Amino acid sequence: MQHNVLILDFGSQYTQLIARRVRELNIFCEIFPYNQIPADLSSFKAVILSGSPYSVRAEDAPHPDLSQIRGKMPLLAVCYGAQYLAHFNGGEVAPSNIREYGRANLTFIKDDEDFFEEIALNSQVWMSHSDTIKQLPSNGVRLASTKDVENAAYRIEGETTYAIQFHPEVYHSTDGKQLLENFLVKIAEVPQSFTPNAFVEDCVAEIQEKVKSDKVVLGLSGGVDSTVAAVLLHKAIGANLYCIFVNNGLLRKNEFENVLNQYKGMGLNVKGVDASARFLSALEGISDPETKRKTIGRVFIEVFDDEANQLTDVKWLAQGTIYPDVIESVSVKGPSATIKSHHNVGGLPDYMKLQIVEPLRMLFKDEVRRVGATLGIDPELLGRHPFPGPGLSIRILGDITPEKVRILQDVDAIFIDGLKSHGLYNKVWQAGAILLPVNSVGVMGDERTYEKVVALRAVESTDGMTADWVHLPYDFLMKISNEIINKVKGVNRVVYDISSKPPATIEWE
Image 1: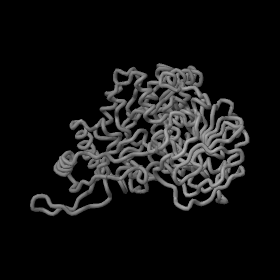
Image 2 (image 1 turned 90 degrees about the horizontal axis):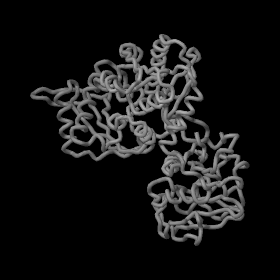
Image 3 (image 1 turned 180 degrees about the horizontal axis):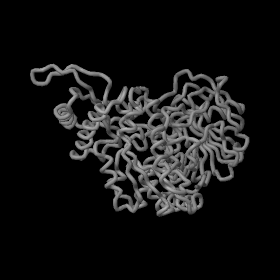
Image 4 (image 1 turned 180 degrees about the vertical axis):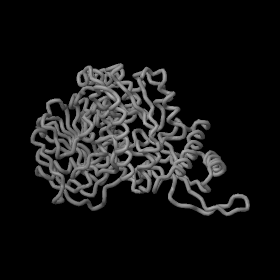
C-alpha cells in the first residue's frame, strides 16, 4: 500500500472528512492519533494536523511530538493545528471576542502564493473555533484574513509549513478542495496515483505475498463490502478462498435465499448456514445495544468456528472491514470518541488460531464501490444500501423476539420495495425501518387498537461519516404508511425520522 499523506487526529469530528477530501484528489492518506505517530515516516510525503475540541491554552490540550516533522516535511495545520503551532512557537492564542463559527469570506489574500493559487478574494470558508491567533508564531507570514479573523492563514518562513484557522474539508469552504490540492500537489508534490485500478493491482499483489498458497475463509454478508472483499480475494488466490454466509435470523425478509442466489455464477465457493435459532436464543431478554452487538459477534464467531473446523488447513480469516469501522473503533485520549463497537474489528479469540486478512481496511464506502466496479461486479449488487452487521437487532429497540423480527422484516420489505418501485432507491444512500419499544392507540374499523410504532429512516450520504435525511415525497410516505398499517399485523402507527448525522447517527442503536 502506498503511504502518501499522514493525518494526525486531535479529536475533531471533521478529521475523517479531511481524509475523504484528500482521497478525492487520488492521494492515499492515513489517520493516526496525535500521540501514536508512526516511528518510520520515510514513506509519507506530507503531514496534516486536524482540528480539535480542545483549546491549546488548556492544561490537558493534545501536545504532539513534531520534532521529526516540523521543517523536515511539508506540513499543513488546520484550526487547532494552526493555533498549536502559533501558541508554542512565539505567537499568541487568546479567546475570541466573538465565537468564530460558520461561514466567512476571505477579505485579504497575499499575492503570488502557491497556497492560494486559483482561489479568489471573497471565497467562502467555514470557521469553527472559540480561540483565535492574535499574534503569528516566529517567522510567521500572514497569507489570508476574513472580516473577523486577521490571521486566517499563514506560513512559516524557512519551512514548508502552512496553517489555516478554517476548515477546507467541509463543503461550506467552497475552495477547500483547491486549497488542499495546492498544498499537496503543487507544494508537497504528492503523486496522485491512488486509483481503483492501482488499488486492485496493489491489493492482489499484497494478498498473494501475505497469504501465498494458504486457505482463507470469509464470512459473507451479502453486502457490498464483503462481496468486494470476496471478489478481490478470489482474484488473488482463486479456489483457496472458502466463503460462508450465516443467517443470523436478523437479515431482511428472504435475504438469506436471495443472497445465495446472487452469488451463483460469480465463481465463488459459498456455503449457506442457517443459524437463526441459535442467534435468537442467545439474544433472548437482552435490550442493551452494545450487549446485543457483542452477543451477535460472539455467536457469529462460534458458528463460524464450527463451520471453519469442517475445512482442513485453513490459516486465514478474511473480513470486509472498511476504514470507517477502523476509525470509529479506536478510542484513545484525544481522538474522536468511540460511537459504537464494530463486531468485525478487534481480532479473534485465542482459540481461533486464524490470522486476519482485511483487503478493504483502508477504503471508505464509496471507494469500495469504485473498486467493485473495476472488478466487474454487478452494478445492482454494488448499489445495495449499507446494512448493519448486527442486522435488525439494532433496529429493534429493546429486547428481541421472533415476533418482533417478523414485524420489522415485513415493514422493511414494504419500505424498500416501495423505494425501488417508485424509482427512489438509488437516490437514497441508506434506508430501513426501526421498531420502537412503545405502543400507541389507534382505531381500525370500529375497534380500538394498542399496537407497535415503526419509524422509517432514509438518508443521503457519501460514506456514512455525515448524513442528511432524504425529503421523500409526501405522497410516497402516505402510500407506504397505509400499506404498512394495512398489511403488517401488530403495527398501527408509522413515523418518519428527519434527523441528520450529526447530531444523530444513521442507526438508532
